[in-house]
Amino acid sequence: MNSTALVTPDVLSAFNLPHDCEISVLSGGHINYTFLARHHEKSIILQRINSFVFPNPAHIMENICSVTSFLREKIISRGGNPERECLTVLPTTDGNMLYVDKENQTWRCVLFIQDTAAHESASNLDMLKEAGFAFGDFQNLLRDFQADSLHEIIKDFHNTPARYSQLMEAVQNNPVDRLKTVTAELDFCNSRKEDCSWLYNQLSANQLPLRVTHNDTKMSNVLMDNVTNKATCVIDLDTVMPGLTAYDFGDSIRAGASTAAEDEVDLSKVNFSLPHYDAYTEGFLKACGKSLTDLELKSLPYGAKLMTLEVGMRFLADYLNGDVYFRTSYPQHNLDRARNQFKLVADMEKHYDEMQEIVYRYC
Ligand code: GN1
Ligand code: MG
Image (cartoon, rainbow, N blue to C red):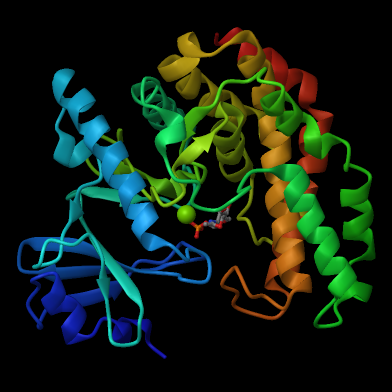
């Protein structure tokens, strides 16, 4: 089915959009459906929220609205343009942040930021530096926000030992009989079981501060200005929650310092790039380095390794569970993604000391 058909006239009316809008799909995400609705000069983004992944969309919108209004004030007070530098949620005609359609699907609408684009990967190192700066700035602007006032949208989202347990549960249940195909991948995870707990233990012992984190800090979640190539706005705020700096830094490195796409099957093309890591780290620490504790700085490279291992375990668990969480294009898609991420983990482990040195160089 062409997914643009999901955008029914009712959905358009709910957000006061004309029925002859031109609708196109904005691809990239594995979870929500995202559409661009254009009408003459006006463009907005419509999203159908995945209710399996996000059972409480109202909580998402509460988090997004409180974080964006806080950011807006900060952006104004430093002389910026909040409509370009911050996500703006557009309410329905009756003033709600969400619309539930006849199929019981939940929709929201945000302002499209003109002359910007989301890029799946960085075409040069400056782009990575920009993305690093944008996510570091996001964190820095929110440093006085009461992190624990936010809803925990997905429980244990970056709790790596819990993700390991979920993988073990999938192994036990083996609901679609795929277990026999993943022996090497499970060995890889099992031999890193102890590593999974490092960040979690530091957090539990109050050694690392709880921050407002984005939790899905890939390149494509920063809009870049088409003219200046500067990072303009951090988007996809669904998973903004209390978390650790190492989650955001780490997830960016996972996605941005790989030499190949997340589902590249030729693993000889999947390598960890130190120059990419260096560029991102420079941008990130320039924006927020001064507000990080010594242990937070030390935790950053570990975050890169753990976020990569973690999403690899999530892909593997979803493969074993029959692809119920991440959208896939072919039966082995999640397994290919998992293998790809594990290759990256192994590569990061080889470069760990250099990763640590680069952090200290920029702080
Ligand atoms: C999902 O849908 P997308 O691409 O924004 C996932 C992230 C993963 C990412 C892997 C809510 O994000 O945690 O890192 O896929 N989001 C959720 O590409 O699970
Ligand atoms: Mg996302």
